[in-house]
Image (cartoon, rainbow over all chains, first blue to last red; front, side):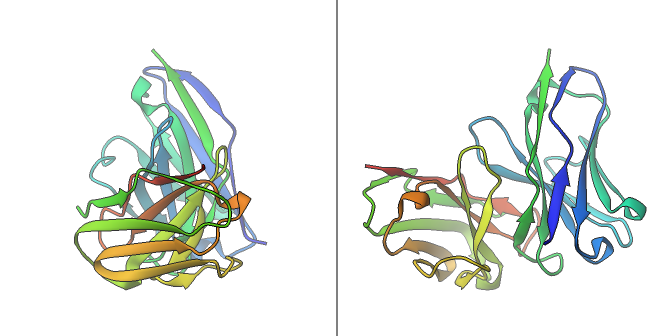
Length: 120
Length: 108
């Protein structure tokens, strides 16, 4: 069974750095894009960007460009979402998800989410 | 950026009733690139419909999607207790990918 397993909840202070992870199990990690999606408390879903682990092609939403870094390590089938300096407004649930077949695809597999709490 | 507007914000219905959810786009979306997701409290979203009308694997046939251009609809023919949740539409044909703000289907 294909699964995306995300790292655990994080509690950080403003200004700190953070890297959360999303590990695939059961499919060819380098053949599918991975997306990151933000959900702020009580709010809707926001697409942050995608990465193709096969060649590290990365595409960002303009809303998140320069605010986060998406990366992947294909040797361990893991994608990452990284902040260099967290803000309280980064407090949210973050999901990784897999577009089913190619960049222009719906997200058919989702990780369980990583809750990030940033205190000021 | 394509803005997706979902209506109504909240739908109050009883089990067994029919639910009709709307998703309107600010510009035309190819029907190949419109999806619907279901999200229950404390859970990740689940893909229901892709390509505007194609059910994802394992999705019951009481869920159906339709529409084209700027107007899309998700219909739940007869609500089961497990269908009370928040539903999001998404377009994935242009960047940035965007989601609607969600429709909550609650028990009346």
